[in-house]
Length: 183
Image (tube, rainbow, N blue to C red; front, side, top):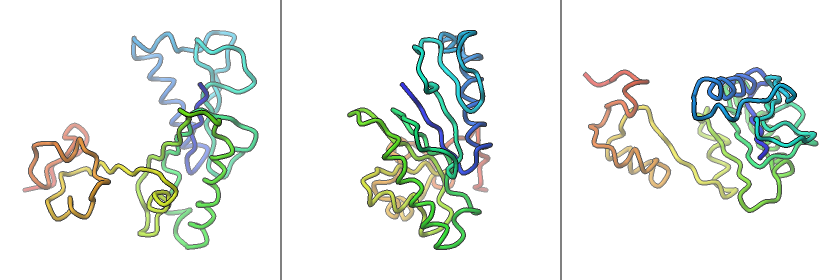
C-alpha cells in the first residue's frame, strides 16, 4: 500500500511522516513495519519493512503546492492543507480547491483507494465545506461537547462517537488534551 501525506507545507507533511515513523519504532506491535537497512528512510519518503521493492516509497510526504504529479497512492491523507495563509482570499481558496483536484489523478483506481481530509475550516467558504459537494462525508469532533442547538447545526456531520458521549455541554470531549472551559 502506498500512502501520500499532503499538508499545507512540505515541513508540516514531513512532520506527519516523522511522527508515523516514530510510532513504528516506539509502539511494540508496529515494530515489524520499521524499514529494513536497505530500504528508504528519508523523512519525505520511506518504506515499511514488509514492502517489496518499488520505485515509489510506502509513505511519501509533500506540500500541497509541491510535486504531486507522477505519484500514485492507495491513500491520500490531506492533513491541514487549508491554513489562514492559503485561504484568506477567494482567489487563494479557488486555487486550493483546484490543487486538491490533482488527488484524483494520484489516487490508484482501486475500490478501496481513499482520500482522507483532516483539518480545521479557516473560513465560512472553507474547502472542507466545498468537498461535501464532491461526495465526501464530513465528520466533526469538537473540543467540547456541543449543546442541543449546536448539535442541530452540526446535523449529520457531528461524529457519532461525540453524540453518544455522556457529557454536559461545554465539557471537553478529550479531557486528556483539552481543559474544561466550563466554570
